[in-house]
Every structure is written in structure tokens, then in C-alpha cells.
Image (cartoon, rainbow, N blue to C red; front, side):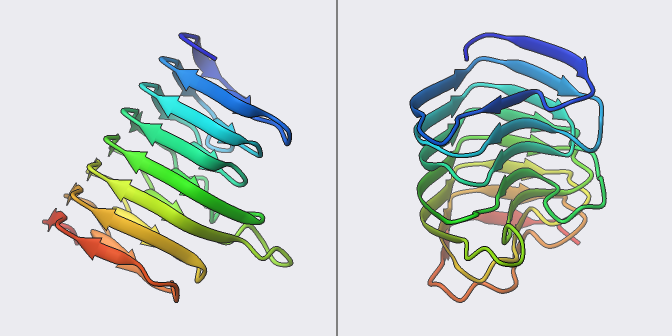
Length: 193
């Protein structure tokens, strides 16, 4: 899915990657979702996915991953995500239905959202989601109306380093429930509420 434009859509912008898909490339797209109840880009299942250099504006979530392992999310601009009042609302949300491994979130700009910049959550009751080997590196997360990075899932193993997180209305990094070892180092975090 390369170099597409979707503006003013009232449904999900790109709903990509099905259960048996491998080696998907989502590159250079520009998506604006007007509805606060739909997602710009949803990754549902599959493996070996590259999400690179996309501009995602509005919607309930910029990038929503509930089942893709071996995914690289880098060099994207995510801005103006709207607050729907639902728990999975964020610039980038990793929300596993099962086990998700090898996630890299790198060099993204996430800003001016009504919600958290990056969020990890449990999918829902009855699912035993788990995230391991996830890296959040070199992102710029600023001017969001909630936390810069919010971890609300207890089974998430993250490496959070070298991010710039500033001017968010909540915490810069909110490390609430994670019981798995998480590394947080070399981040520039300032002027968050």
C-alpha cells in the first residue's frame, strides 16, 4: 500500500494485513480520518510489516496494532488524533489479542493529539495479550492532551530510549501496570504536567 491519499473519510483509512499476510509495506500514504470513532491505520494480524513515512491525521487512533509481530513503524507523522472516550484511543496503540513480538516504533513525530502519544493496553477481557521485544526509540512526542507514553497493560516488555517527550498534558512516561522488565533510559522528558 504505497503513496495513497484518503482525505475526509468517515471510516477507517487503511485496514491492512490479514491473518496469513506476510511482508506488507505501507509507505508514503496520507490519510485524514474525520470521525473520532475510526482508525487511520489498523494492523490486525500477519507478520513482517513496514509502516514508513506516512502522514496520519485525526481519527480515533493513528496506528492501531492488535496482532502484528515483526513490525517496523518509523518516520511517520501522526497528528490531531481525536478523543473518542474509548480506552484504545492514542497516536499509536499496541493492543495485543495474543502475543506480539519484535515491534519497533522509531523516528515518529506524534503531536497535537487529544490523547496519549503512544499507548499499550490489553485487548479486552478474555484475551491474554503479551508484547515482548518492543522498542520505542528516537520519537518526538509533544503537545498531546494526555501522557506522552502510557503503559496500562501488565504484560508488556518495552525498551524506551532516546525519545523527546515534552509539553504533554499528562505524564511524559506513565509506567502504570507493567510487570515485565521495561528499560527506560536516555529520554529527554520535560515540561509535561
